[in-house]
Each structure stands twice: as structure tokens, then as C-alpha cells.
Length: 162
Image (cartoon, rainbow, N blue to C red):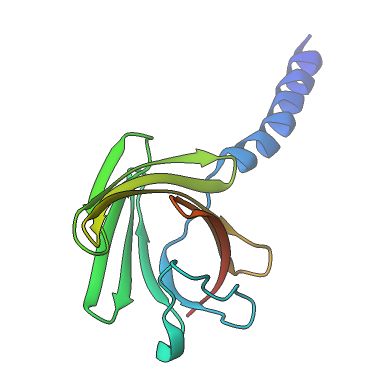
């Protein structure tokens, strides 16, 4: 009876280890610089940086939130995203606010956002979905799908740590 109990307990542990590894969320913390050669160029209307060089992020992640500090021509822009799926509100480009919800989809972090802004006297709503993942080679991939009144664009950015 004791051998059977030990065997069953050992079997349960061996089966639980892969499940725990899958359930563990990746940590995006660190300083990230865009790998321009591996990234898609900025489509019209997605705020490309032109000759300004690669994008740079500093990310801090806790169990509760993800904080991204972006270096922009106007200084550092800080955004904080709650990781429990509840709404986060952050400053948006051209003024206004961006309302978003962030949740885990397996090992990927998905943020859906809505921003309403005034462009040339017209109120415009922009919806976007940003999917962030860590790759086996240590890079971070960010795929952004953006919907505007002019259509939908998709852009993939690849970042190197360091």
C-alpha cells in the first residue's frame, strides 16, 4: 500500500511540473531596443520615427501590472497596464486618453485599446490590439493591429534586450 501511495504521489508530481511551467507567465522586464532589420517598417499613419532611429522601451513587470516607458521626441512617455484584465487609462498621442485592457493568452500578453482623438476637426476612434511575446532567441516580438476609419494595418516589431 505504501509503495502504491508513493508511486501515485510521484506520478502526480511529474504530471504537475509541465503544467506549472506552462502556467508561468513570461517576464518582459528590461531595457529593449528595436531591431530595425527584423521589424516591419512603419506604415502610413502608424507613427513611424523616420530617420530618428530605433524605438527603445524600458519595461517593469510585477504580478499586478506592466509599466512601459517609451523614449519619444517629446520625452519619456509612461504607460501602466493592469494585468488582471481590468481597464487601464494612459495618455495618448495628440492628447487625450487611451483606454485599454490587458490579459494573458497563454504565454502572450494581449492589450486591446481604444482612443478617440480630434484630427483636423473630426473625432476619430482608433482601436488597436498589441500582442507581446518572448521568443526562444531572447527577443521580444510586438505585433500591433490597428483599425482606423481608413482601414486596418498590422505591424511586427522585434526588440533586443540590453
